[in-house]
Length: 237
Image 1: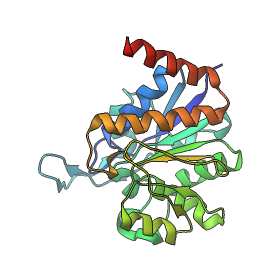
Image 2 (image 1 turned 30 degrees about the vertical axis):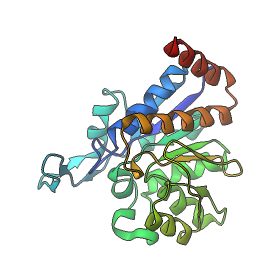
Image 3 (image 1 turned 135 degrees about the horizontal axis):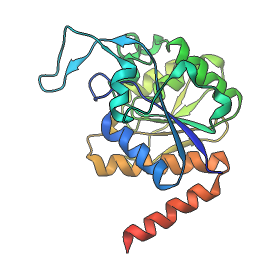
């Protein structure tokens, strides 16, 4: 049986939701390994940004409805997700991760995670099920687990301000390269920088791919990892 992995979205679009390249890279990396994907998002209303002008719009939008654009309509309210049904959970980045799933965008190191997301992450951690976080999303792990005194080891690449905030929240930041991951075996966390660097989609995909591979390894589903290696070999031919 292939691993069942939740992908927690925060809207649709880098400036107010999930970063689309990151989310799609994660979904492709999971799909090519045969993982079962369960997309979820909170059913909350938040402000949005015009992605052409990069200015706020007056009309707010529903985060679950916006996230459904990425999930092609196949998505669930995060409150309906039972941690027992998942083998792992992955959070793409984008400003939505820092303003819709938590308030890091405004509160910084004093950030709090919205209750329905904190409950899911805490339950996954308690069950020792792996959690992957990309781009800015590791601040969510710092906000949840740093205050549990488990000192989550995380990366956002080389961004000094965010790294300092993670450390203040009780996490431990580690610098890594643009396509690299940091693995916290003790807390079952895998993080990668993605668009925290000034990079293009191919670099983002490589980081997402490595994160997914490590997450699937932690689930104990070697068949999924092997399917990924075989797919890579086929593409290279």
